[in-house]
Image 1: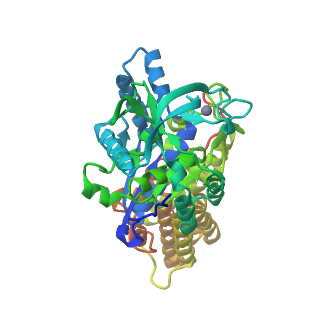
Image 2 (image 1 turned 60 degrees about the horizontal axis):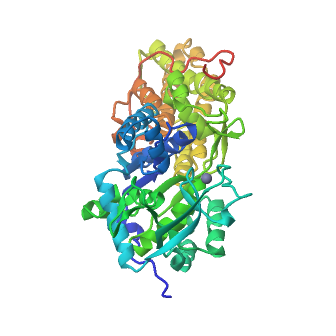
Image 3 (image 1 turned 45 degrees about the horizontal axis):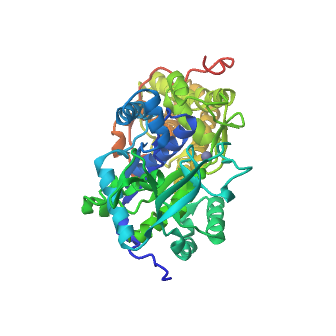
Length: 526
Ligand SMILES: [Zn+2]
């Protein structure tokens, strides 16, 4: 059999200056929980960072509606499936709005643009000779929406859902996945960064090296889904349908200019449990359709609640809105970035959340902002200008922090990026303690020194707030505003605005504390 090659891969120059990132699209049979929110929040941090770095950024999210679980849920609620999905779209959008997620586009798989994309790609794959009819006999886990072979089961059960898969025998259409085994191995060989972190790539390579079977890509006699154009009695298998959202959202099959503008994606952010779909099936589908492959897939870890995977039945679901309602979105966003090394699993607990809130926000960043704006008001009527002469030592710390930050954020080490900003915040707090402006203010011969200390502190805080903006957008804009920066968020640029002294004179203003200290643990919300 002829081994397909990967043609049409864009060279990096082709797409310089744009960044197209996506998250997984979600089944709408329940509201988003913290695990879902974790993915969208971290993707949003990356999107906001890319915009800050000057990349023309396109951030796509969406809902996966053609799932049997969605269909069943709609029937349970005695709703037409589409009407149910309409309602859930509102719920999802509301959660994302309250968590300050800045997506540029939101796709639903019931949209016409998506149907066109799916049909176009499926026809191309068929034209390539990669579709044939066969009979699928085996398990199907409805919770996974996945065909399960004997080798995928533990004690006859789906290990993810601990249920016996439904036994089905259907006349289905198959995709020649096996044909792409060698091409996939070569792809990961040539592009080791195509799947990160490395541990995820190694898992996938082992699966591909082991063996690849052809997969069923349609379901017979089902109504809820996109009809197979050459067999109207079947619908497209929900995963095959869902993956195509990444191209149907940017014009595939309809708007070639738009499609060329954004595709290939620069980054797919997904959970570590769905790398097989994204890193084996998806690239093989694209190869078969003659399309370039996504440049990178990032498989993030899970957020556990006190060590347990979040599960509705076990009562270990954290509603992200509980945290957002009590504290606004930013403390939660900061927690998830600071506490979890991106790519690994992490934990959420209310105790730990409150500890971090007090340590990072109330006592550290919030306190620093209050001190600086209060002293600026008291000693300089709010207006700070640098003293003549060489920049002080904080200038160097800030420049280094911005450098460390960029280096980390470019490789999605979000935790290290935030840590670089907090390093600058810590250094600024220490600087104020050591230089004691309140003592300088009592000595008329120290006027110049006092001006320098106040300006340096405020300028360092301004740079730190800019670096933290992708993690805590609302709060950091407020800090920047209190330090005299009035640019709209979309005009902020790292290479200009994170440069020391670039703001010139700082016209500061006082305000209410952003994060009042939390007294003895209030525990989980009732
Ligand atoms: Zn399952």
